[in-house]
Length: 343
Image 1 (cartoon, rainbow, N blue to C red):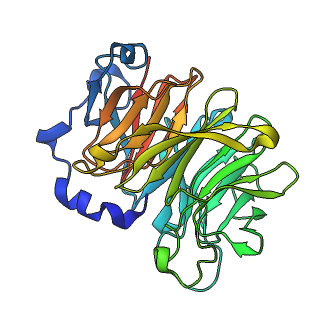
Image 2: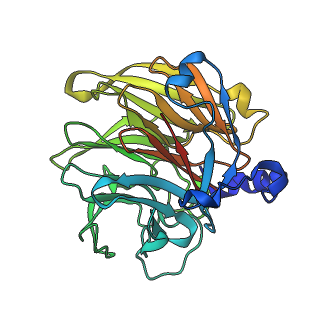
């Protein structure tokens, strides 16, 4: 979701105060202590199989302009995530906390520019290399450096379709077969939908085949954003971040991996009318449960799109990542990086 969409959100809720949602862990535990934020809401008894009744969201670190695109790197025991306006990627580890990982991350040009120019969604390919959705450079790129020795050296995987430059690749997911599926809304363009450099008259959902060819899969979603596969890679979910049509869509993969059987996975439009925030990034666990940013925080759905519960947050959430065999959920939310320990 674009940063400017949430300016009123932050004004509405103001600075998080101790009296509202902050508790301290017991210092005598010997573990790092983190402030708490928000609350957990059960909507269905099945929620208890995923989240314990006494679970809570921890503020691991803060100070970001707009945090996004988290990915857990198990080999390094680190979380990587973008700070889009600051054109940076940060890493977080339990041992060292927050550290600058990569800058520039999404815009490598020499001409000064503003807006949401950094990287957004991050993922690892089958070779364990870092793949970036780069807003400023308007491409999907691979970092050509080891994960433990990052450097702003990039190879373009795709930067346009049929001669038209992408708007600002937003989020991406790896298919089990190796293809990269990604969304391309206009949030990274300096003048958004009215930017003079916008090339295509639509916002697309695309695929980069393992051969490097690019396919346009969907051009009917006005603000395609979060994207992910259900287990097995046979069903694709796409979030639409329009507040008036706050919907997650589902598609089955047909012949030649074309998208068929389009349908609504869940419609949160009525909630978005009264609660700030909208469908943005999400992740799917090994059992098909979906952890999705949406109105008011993180929504947890089962594989059929039934809401099981929510992690209600007083700041706008942008994306999340699962780690530790789906036992830990990391959340990027406005200026914060959060963590919820699951079952």
